[in-house]
Image 1 (cartoon, rainbow over the protein chains, first blue to last red):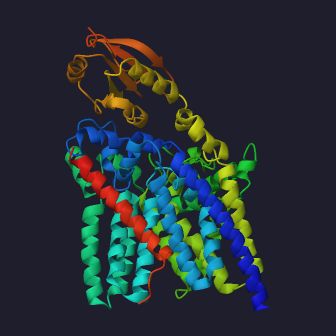
Image 2: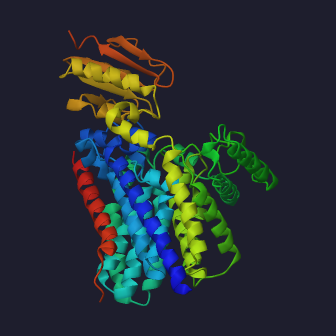
Image 3: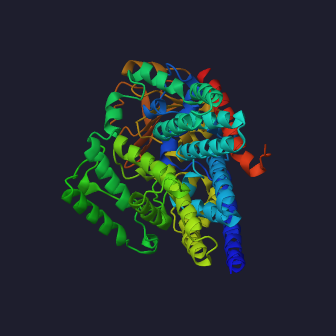
Length: 546
Length: 32
């Protein structure tokens, strides 16, 4: 009977393996071919790299938004060679995904067999928010890689005692810290657990602590904190911005955020098939009602959001997805873990780690509709906990493994097909209609870009001065050939502006997100205006051409 | 002492490569 069931489980594992490999090829092509599409990357994650190339990091007057300076950049900087190449922007994130999958496969295979390993891999590929992050340029997935490699290294150290594993676990902690501000929390948790595990081995602890200090100095993005302090008087950015993004309501805000994340991640897997979606508005309404009944109304938000504006984003764009149907299953596993004390079982420990990270995020970060990607570590861990739980309590059961295959297989295939940016047509468009694909999330910027490019082609030796408001998509302009575009910083004085514009040679001024820009007294003639969302204008500098 | 399989080495290789590129890129940018 066992061997019969084992045979069935192997058959199920085979399907999971084939499906996983096909999906890995699909997502790998996206990572290789897709242009930069993510809003944040256009504004600051990658937008800051060409600016740093022009003026360095410290005392650089060219930044166009505080966010280019205030956030850690260890992972963002990895994209610099790819910006030079002009393709493969998603490869660093995709490599993070491969690393995470390798850790998951290795762990589950060792504990429950190869079939469980492949089901775990498929489970991670079934989380839309995870796979979308794995092919774009945002800096959430490197935090997950850091936690995964830390866990992997500590597990291997316990197995064979080699110090090289401790060095890698320290490296992973530094990398997670420096990739994203919210990565500091899981990194601190990893550090605490490591120290507790290593207490019995004094030599091991010394190695680990020394390597962690070195790793945090090298990879913790210390320099952006210093540069931010120099510029704004606060290591994490302008005090008002930092304050605005924090949960200012303490435990009440944390509890409210936990309710929002829990209800916001209930996904029946059918929402995207419906037009209009009737499930999500019902959940939003239920969430508002529940928050009111619990006395948590209006708590935990960033200052520009409130209960009436509460929106659960189920439109699977670059950074706006939830975790699909498996995410709902994860919520059930977390409830189960909360009801049962099982500290000796893997699945329960994973839930405890994931739940602690999620609680820290609820407590520290104000709620915004697109925050779900901050929960990458908890949801990935609890998905693996689900596989571990099923394999432990139903070993070799074809029904249990089959149910997981069905759950993960559906979500893994439906995820890209129902997305707005990752359908097979989007992959083709990445090659055949690359510029339009790049601006798909902000179409009004496309004519602005085309106008700037036309001007640059007509004046190959000319310069475009860029005056960009804080939410401007600066990256495409900064990537025009010959370093033609030069930013003017956040708030240049009129005198500086006049002086800059009076330089010799043909030049233009591109103004982004400055609808009320005053041209009086400046040597400018309007070339093209782009009202509306773009809020842009392209001017010819009249003095410079004489 | 068990020899590491390629799948066990892969996360290390990826992390090391990302860290190396990050350090070099940041040094380049800071020095501009």
